[in-house]
Amino acid sequence: MGKLKSKMRHNRALLSRVSMIVGLTVGCGVFSDSYAQQPEKLNVVLFLIDDLGWNDVGCYGSDYYQTPHIDQLAEEGVKFTNGYAAAAICSPSRASILTGRYPARMLLTNWIPDGRWDRKKHRLKEGRFVRALPLEEYTLAEALREVGYQTGFVGKWHLGGLPFYYPEHQGFQVNIGGNDMGNPGNYFYPYNGTWRVPTTPLQATWHVLGDGEQYDIRREGEYLTDRLTDESIEFIRKNQDQPFFLMLSHYAVHTPLQAKEEKIARYEEVPEADRQGKPTYAAMIESVDESVGRVMQTLQDLQLDDRTLVIFTSDNGAYYKASSSRPLRGNKGSYFEGGIRVPFIIKSPTQVNKGIVSDVPVIGNDLYPTVLAATGLPLRPYQHLDGENLIPIINSTGGLEREALFWHFPHYNGHPDAAPVGVIRRGPWKLIEYFDEDRQELYNLEEDLSETQDLSEQRPEQTSRLYEELQVWRESVRAEMPQPNLEYEGK
Image (cartoon, rainbow, N blue to C red; front, side, top):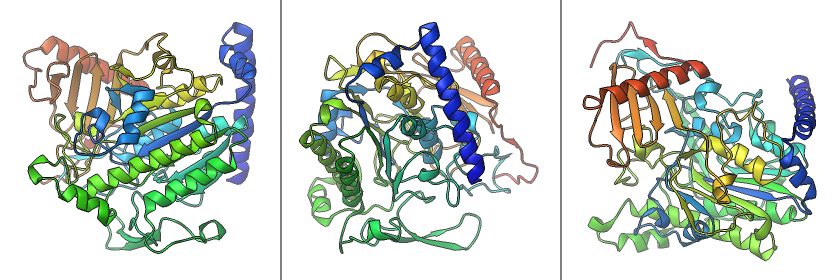
């Protein structure tokens, strides 16, 4: 496997050099030219929060959750009000951020390793899917590392396990806390936990931070969100004199819901009728906001803030037992807006105007080409096939050519309102196709953000057009479809 990966990297390097030469020859090398002229390369910091809902931050409408540092990031950058995750669950959306591809194209459409399908209760057999981000994918981290960036991953990975599929196998030189688990056993030191292996009575035991010299400094009572922030700041300080890409992928605010007692107490003082979610969840969000503030302050102290691209987003909507998504319908796991619409903020040193609010629909797939364009690197359209460069929006110089977004989920996941579905959004229109019921629902999001009125019968022509477009897209990406389950016994 080591020789295979080495050969793959060699071939990728050759392809990259060829693409750069072709770009210069045909006049598409504007990114390479600007990159060469820059005295200092742009750094990149990507905050990826786990299970943070679209309106779980102040700048997206919450007056319950306290997020002054995230709000400031939006005031200084671009806030996308129609920002989406590529899936309503974690692993697929994370894979799309790193590859610029729809989950369906990679056959990575469910959380890893899954295990919630029931052969007696579910009408369909789930679509097949891979249990790790394939090594054949050329990640954003690999693209940046190839041109001299120091690449660091801190926090939740959940895209495969040992021996081949950790962050260090996908372009990250530093990996702190990233493993095959989707949540920590505990948010307080020593972060130990147990986890039942799906479809079996077996228990897996692990702790987020591994053994070894880099983990020797530990403090009793230490909080994981703080520790991951400490590690991120240390990475920035160590690499302040060279370009770096830091992906701070917090385990928060995923379950278990655990936070600092003094923070919880403040939210418990809020009358229950005025709460958007659980006080513990609110306290977890506050710690995440403090993390953003500490990292941004570090960039400012080191005089790096004026040459660092900062991105903030979430991998899917909020867990239904933790927070309300209203006015959106649904939560994590659902393909109503509450499951896939997420906070989406980008702050770039190149933008002229601050505090831009954009209603253009964007998605996690777009981050790969956007980072390449922002750092002056040539795009890799053969890799990020499903992403668009957002720099024209950020710099107020243009828009996007894309007209529709797509989702594909041929699985059952146990969350409320979840079902095997296909989804297309074109303009204000959103069509949801239910695979196990042979029906579609149509919503106009501009007039009905809460998706309360199904217009499929009132607008049959619109429904038919979107349904046909969704089918064509599925064929183009070779989406895996669920099949009839002959063992189904009904409800």
